[in-house]
Each structure stands twice: as structure tokens, then as C-alpha cells.
Image 1: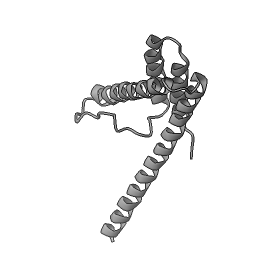
Image 2: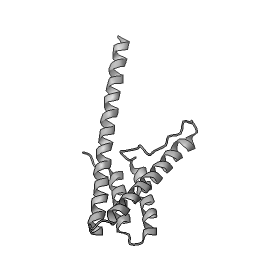
Image 3: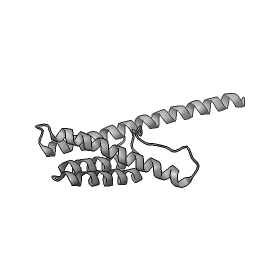
Image 4: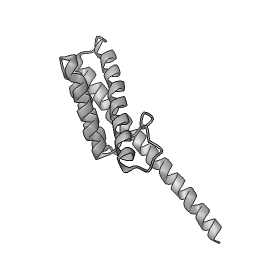
Length: 132
């Protein structure tokens, strides 16, 4: 597993947000963590990312960024709220949630890269067969 810098930033943002005592400060911390992590590398699981079917450059970059950051922040806020309601001490809950996000994000990114590499190998093999 290759730990990616974006995953570390996202995990640290989740952990810091979980440690925040005031619930109104958690959402902005999550948004900043996910936004900074997006620019380092995209998240491993992008099921919540909307990619517009347009050739307009501002839409093809802005919409995936906004939908991914907002949706993952909402998912992590819900997970954080649920985890904070357990008897688990808040620092441990923050470490578990942040560390779990780093591991899951990195593993999913590795799986995505392996899938893309396998698809590229199949495309390359098909091109060689068609050329001969």
C-alpha cells in the first residue's frame, strides 16, 4: 500500500475536526482538509464525485472538486458525529477515524490504479493484435 499525501491531509483534517470541541467548527475544518487533499491527489473512492458531460473547462474542473469535497465532508461529519456519541474517548475516536480514512483512501487508490493498469494492458494487447 502506498500512502498518498492527499490521504494523509484528508485524514489529519478529519482527526482535527473530530477533536474540535465546538460542532460549528467541524464542518469548515473538514472542508479545508478535503479541499487541500484534493489538490495533492484525488481521493481513492470517487463514488460521490459528479463529472459533468460537457467540454467546458471550468465545469470539468470545478464540479468534480465541489461535489467530492462537499459529499465526503458530509459523510465524514456523519461518521464523526456517530463516533463521538459512543463511549470511546474523543482523542481515540479522532485517531481511529482519521487513520481509518488514510488507510481506506490509500487502499482504494491502489485498487483504482491496478484496475486502470489492467485496462491499459488489455487495450495495449488489443491494439497489438489488431495491428498484426
